[in-house]
Length: 177
Image 1 (cartoon, rainbow, N blue to C red):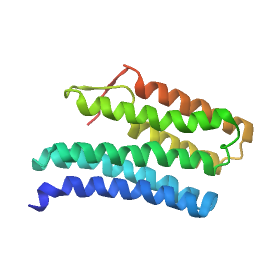
Image 2 (image 1 turned 135 degrees about the vertical axis):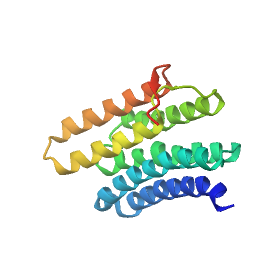
Image 3 (image 1 turned 45 degrees about the vertical axis):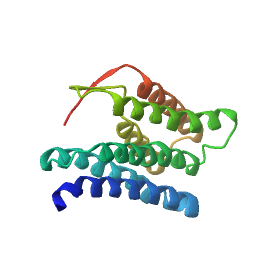
C-alpha cells in the first residue's frame, strides 16, 4: 500500500518546497534567497522522482498526474517569480509585471497541454521544471557574482520571456528519463 502512495508523497514534498520558497521570500525577502532557490532545486529532485517511482510501483493515477501539475505550477511557475521580485528586479515598471504574469501563465498552459497529450519520447515545449530550475540557478549565480544590476535585470527579464515562449512552443524536447 505504501508503495502506491509514495509517488503522491514525493509530489507533496515538491509542493512543500515551492510553498516554503514562496513563504521565505514573502516573509524574509532577499535574506533567504539562497534557501528559497535551493528549495526550488530540491522540488525538482522530488518532481523527477515522483514519476519514476509511480511507474516502478504501478502507482500512476489521474489524481497523481493532476497533483503533479499543480505542484509544478507552484514550485516552478510561481516561486521563481518570487525570486525575481526578491533580487530587486520587480516591480520596476509595466514590463516587470507583464513578465511576472506571463511566465506562470505560460507554465500553466504547458502543464495543461502535457496532461491532455499522449505519452511520447519527447516533451512538447520546454518543461516548466527545467525552466523554473534554470531561473533558480541564475538567481544563485547572480547572488554570488559581483555583476552589474542592469546586466542582471536584462538577463533575467530576457530569460523569463524566452523560457515562457519555449514552454508554449511546439519545440520537441527529448525526455532524458
